[in-house]
Image (cartoon, one colour):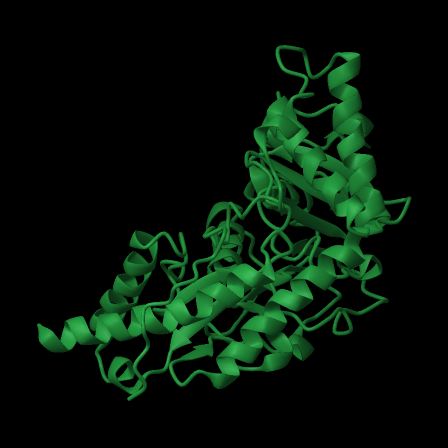
Length: 390
């Protein structure tokens, strides 16, 4: 057995949480000193900052000029729910489920909206549903990147260009890390707290002209909560997409979002962000290939998430344990690393198989990941030793 000594080098930033994610390199509170605090978000200054977030978002992500971008309440969850409640019911729906958040959206559609014509196309953790089985004459709801499974769709080629239904995409751990095909997406949502490491509470919703047409031609049969309302008298509320938010936003969080967007611009925009992410996932792939103790939860390398990297433990002693003991051992590894101040918040999502989840988005430094790898091996071996001594 290889003996792993306690490493001498620790990551400079131990924050590898998959949400909220690490701040950009060099981030300080002083960078938010220009926040419009104590002012109405409807005043000229506040509204200008909100509009600036929208405009910079469009530029960095390359969102088409005829797509609307809005800042909405309640993070990515609020943005997705807004889309589900406002748009679904006009035709049948295909729900794609392969991890916990997609499962949650399917539950909301079937149990809360109680739609009759719903198909749930699902797959186990680590796999994708049969994308070839999706019917694009229906509306389609899916996560681009399964944050809790480390599995993402490979591209947008599987989405029909001549679809008659809408595509509603939860892209919260994909936006700013992957080159999203806007012509294939009718509704796209994400939160500031993921790839850009911004503060929580606010979500973003991006609507294609086809989505706007649906909003203006279809009225859902159920009561619509105020924070979900995107239309008035059958017309899109344009102000939402110009910085007039539905409810009061945190101007400190807005300033933080602007700080992240300006940093993205300074490193080359989306291409710069993707390059940093590419280096990070490349380092992880290289280490996993050499490790006898860890593997990706994703079964197909083509579907491996480059941001929310989910690992399973493959050491023989670990796989010989029953499910409860595996969960306890994995938790012990996480606690050891946390206690050493080496890696914070890297346990697998509560519904996922036992293992680790490491954020590798652009705000993480490759050098910190490289410093982490020997610690993972050491913590696993320490856990084995403890269990064998018990």
